[in-house]
Every structure is written in C-alpha cells, then in structure tokens.
Length: 337
Ligand SMILES: Cc1ncc(COP(=O)(O)O)c(C=O)c1O
Image (tube, rainbow, N blue to C red; front, side):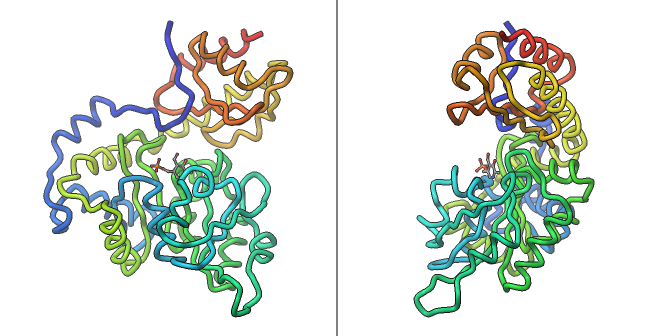
C-alpha cells in the first residue's frame, strides 16, 4: 500500500538534486564569516526580503527566539496572536530564555488587528509591564494576511513605537497566495524569518532577516544560544537549492490542497468551506466521528494526517505528494464512509 504523508510539510526529504548540491558545497568556518555557501544564502535571503542583512539559523524557533531577545528582552511583553507558534510550540522560550512575557491576543483566523493590539498596550504606569514588540505569523495555520491587514498592523506598531517581527515560516506561501512579493510583505516588519525546511524542502535551517545592526546583534544571540556554525555551508547549499528550485512549485501544493478541500467538502463526516483553504494547510472539523477515529481510518488506507483536538484534523500538502498522488488521496477521502 502506498502511503501519502499529509501530516506536515516538514516531512519532506532532500531530493537527489538537492543532496548533490549539498555534497558539492564550498564550505569554511562561519564563525570567521568564511563559509561561502552560508554567505551566499544570507545574501539571497536579504535580497529576497528587501532587508539589509540576514543570518542562517538552525530553526524557525531559533529565529523567533532571537527576535524576542532583541526586540523585547527582559520584562517586556510580546503581543502576538493566541494561536501563534511561539505560544503553542516553542516551549515559551521567549519567556524562559529571553525573559519576555508572551501575550496571546484574539483575532479572526489567527490574525492580529489594531483593535486587539491597542487594548493590550498598558497605560504608562510605573507598575505596568511595557509592551516590547508585535509578533505576527504569516501564514498562520495556512491563512495569509491581506495587504491591508498587514498595513493596519504595521501602522499600529509604528504609531505605538513597537518593533514588529514576522514569523514567516511559510512566507513564500503567503507571497504566492497574496500576490505580494516577499519583500512587499517583509516591508511591514522590522525583522522576518522564513523556514527552508518546510514546503521549500531543505533538511534544516531558517533565515532571519533585518537591518545590519539587528543581524549583527542576532549573530551574538545565536552564539549565546549555542547556534554558532562552522562548515554548515553543506546545509546552506540545500537552502540555496530550495530558493532556486522549490519556490514556484509551492503553487502545486496550494492547488493540491484546494482539490483535497473540495473532496472533503462532499464528505458527510467533514465540515469545511473549501474557500477557507488559502495555501497548503487544510484544517477541518469532523462530524459524527472523532478526529482521532477519522485519522486512524484514513491512515489504514494510506493517507496520513494529524489531529490536534477532539474534532479537528490537519492535512498539509508538500513536495512529498504530487501528480497522481492527489487523485489517489481524493479517491481515498471520498471513499471514507
Ligand atoms: C509557523 C511556524 N513558526 C515557526 C516554526 C518553527 O520552525 P522549526 O521547527 O524550524 O523550529 C514552525 C514549525 O513548524 C511553524 O510552523
């Protein structure tokens, strides 16, 4: 039986061509700034995001943590959405290690808005914690910020004197879905991180981008966290390959997710509006059966998904599935009683 892995876009494995690029990478000691592949990846990331500089970091979590260290720091609040990755899946590292408080705000479909942000900024009293930064995630659970929404958040932040960090783990998906360029999106944030190891298909790594001064300090915090790298150009080469070869194909993942959403919308046990699926991540509720039961039953037929609640299932498309796989996946879903 063939298995179709829709648990996450992090399950992708480097292709032969990517492995070849890794094997051929020129390397050097990055603590001496001497790894040509890392330097090249960082230059590409800075150019793509329209920022002055970039830093290769081991993970999206590390990029977010470094930004919290630098923008908020000890005793300040990070204003973010209550559904955000830094709240749910990063072990509160922003609090545990950077000393900031993570404040989870309400907002439709995971997105921040000026109303929620302004009600979270405390009056300027000596015993009040100060806001330190705004953190937004784009895409968040597969949903992207519209241009006007980004502008509203960044206008608020500028007026409030708060720096913005964008967790752009899936920044390229957001660009594709919104029709904005990556740099147009990133212009609404002081710093932005994107992951190479999700839909872009690299085995490891993220890029944190921002001003020269911010990245200079970020390098120090990365070192403090034990993230200084040596001949990691082998990994950066996978990132370069991903940026050169795997960005445009994200459109295939979005189209595949739409097709799967259409198939699900015809199933009595699934509740979703296909138009709500905006990129490569499908969330839906089950009806009459628990999410666990449905995930188990689909897995027995070869379609792997994940359930993070009693009635919610997540399916994610990526380069791990493509072409005829999507027809098979839709047939299995449609055949699920
Ligand atoms: C939105 C978002 N931000 C950050 C991360 C963290 O990335 P990493 O797993 O590389 O630490 C993830 C990982 O899934 C994510 O989905």
